[in-house]
Amino acid sequence: NAGVTQTPKFRVLKTGQSMTLLCAQDMNHEYMYWYRQDPGMGLRLIHYSVGEGTTAKGEVPDGYNVSRLKKQNFLLGLESAAPSQTSVYFCASRTTGSSYNEQFFGPGTRLTVL
Amino acid sequence: GQSLEQPSEVTAVEGAIVQINCTYQTSGFYGLSWYQQHDGGAPTFLSYNALDGLEETGRFSSFLSRSDSYGYLLLQELQMKDSASYFCAVRTGTASKLTFGTGTRLQVTL
Image (cartoon, rainbow over all chains, first blue to last red; front, side, top):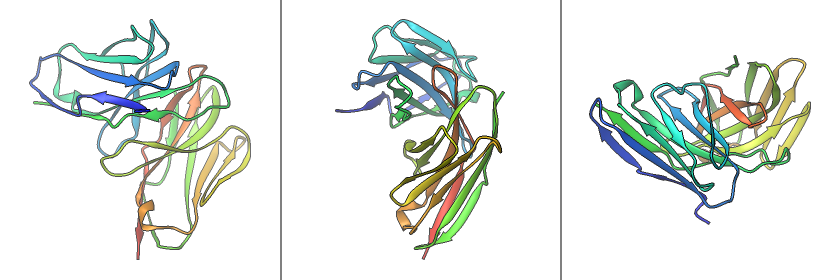
């Protein structure tokens, strides 16, 4: 099992450019999440999904869009990148059920917007 | 909204015991999680408390008091590899969303 993978690992964008970050999980998890982490801060939830075809806004959704067309994939889009979106982006997934409380994180994507 | 407070830095000697505290204010509380993150790495799950009391997993233990909105992570027999950032996170809502604290950077010294 690869667990949670993220593509790309690093990216540099110019202001106004667009890009899509891909998250894939092979654990058949229902729930998936996108977070951003800025220096010296905790992770902040951008968007999340509780199943294929469903998405919802998290704490800091502005400037991002997401799609969950397949259960194993969760895409994060930046339509017009801004320097404030320079961050490390983590994807996570989790199975359902109250007995399972662990979110599994991908290795992260380090994004710089110039 | 939710807010969590934890110390920004803690330093301890190898072999010692260290406690990292976390206080929170939230609505719709389900439980308190702890995650470890090494520099340049991804967060990894350590523990989860939904009920009051102590949960032990090897050298790590986690405690929760729901009435005090307080929890802590206890690390025993510290090793150099424990040097990392530790985040508490409250779980809220039916989608098991997590709100993270800003993290405690633990440095283990010789």
